[in-house]
Image (cartoon, rainbow, N blue to C red; front, top):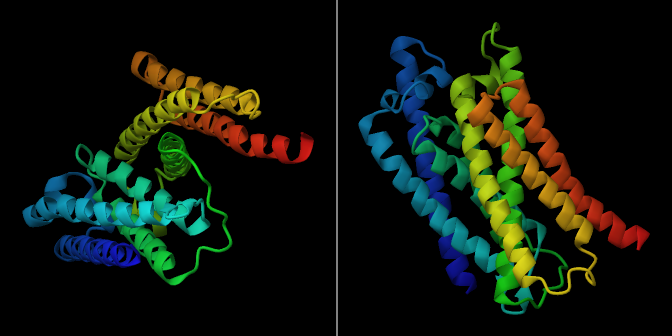
Amino acid sequence: MYDLTLLASLTAIFFYALGFAILWRAANSSNEPEDLDLAESLDASPTNLSTNTVGILPWLTLTALIGHGFACINALTGENGFSLSLIGVSNLVAVVMVFVVAASSTKLPVNNIFLLLFPISIFNLLCLNLIDPGNIAPLELSTAQVAHILLSISAYTALMTAALQSILLALQERRLKQPRKGLYGLLPALETMEHLLLSMLWIGLALLSLSIVTGLIFLEDMLSQRLTHHTILTSLSWLVYASFLVGHHVFGWRGVTAVRWNLAAFALLVLGYFGSKFVLEYLL
């Protein structure tokens, strides 16, 4: 099984690196003749990239995601049970982040964000194969319970990505009258960032909905497990996310309002997890 994990990791690393090289070359070739910055060369429309790049990049990303996902699942689900090691969870986080942006890139010109995500994914895969996972006791869980945990981690990751992206959106709005520098030169246009945030929220809300439903169905005796407060806070977070998305489509909420709603919902989600851990470990 380790050989398959290594093969899947190497495959993912190769295609991540190839995708990064193609994007970087396309950015530089677009930049040189017209003296455009990186964001302008990749941002306004998919047609700014060469036809070959636009056509091949989704396939490179999909192949890398399949390999990365396989290696990640093998790391989390070993022969002795389900292992929530830091390296395994970090790789799951990377997979979900790439997936969210890849899904959004089918409708939005956000390919340049892969210039940040691909190296992060490669780093996580190298850690997965070069560093021992540590002393983590495997958990003996049913398939349904494992599915619930994976959905929960995926939901948290997608919504965490949306929260971080909303912070970048707020900073980007403040710099509208200033020239782009550093990281801001890699970001898409403000309107594209807003659309990307909405895509992340929809994907995160769908995953969170599945997580809540599977938790209610597959986690027996929630009261005896002292998970009631966790479920309540998570459900409140779901309501805040859903309320904002309804408000966006009905009342046109956006900009700073979107950032505030998003961060408030994510704060409830974090409180539901870390607050539950604090209550269980220190108060009960």
